[in-house]
Length: 160
Image (cartoon, rainbow, N blue to C red; front, side, top):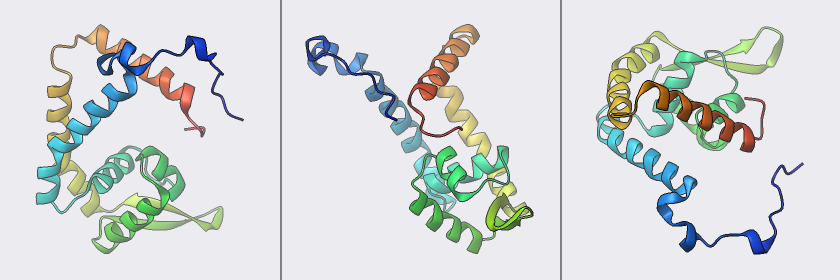
C-alpha cells in the first residue's frame, strides 16, 4: 500500500517558491554527493568503489546479512550488490556462509582482510564525517538524527 498522502493541487507549492535551499531532498543529495565525492580519491587509491566502501562499513557493524538486507543498508541496487560482492569475494574481503537454518540463504561476513580494509579506511570516513558536522552542537546533532530517523520511517519500504 502506498503511504503517500494525496495533496490537493491548490496546496502544492512550486519548487521555485520553495527554493532549492529549502527543499530537503535537494539538500540531502548535495550533502551526500559532496561527502562521496570527497571520498572518491581515497577510494580509487584503495581500489574501492562507493558500493564496496558501504558494504565494508555495513558488514563491520551488521555481520551476517543476506544480499537483500545488505542492499538496503548499503543503499545499493540488488544487481549492483551482487556484482560488488562477487568482486569483494574474489579479492578476499568477504565470505558467504550458508545459513544454518536454511541452506538456500547465504549470509555475508567480512574476512580478516575485509575487516583490516575497513579499519584502514574508517579514520578517513570519520574525518570527513566530522568535517561535515563541524559547528553543529551535540543537542542540534541529536535532534537532526532524530529527524532523519523519522523521515526514513516515513518513506521506508522494508522493516529495516
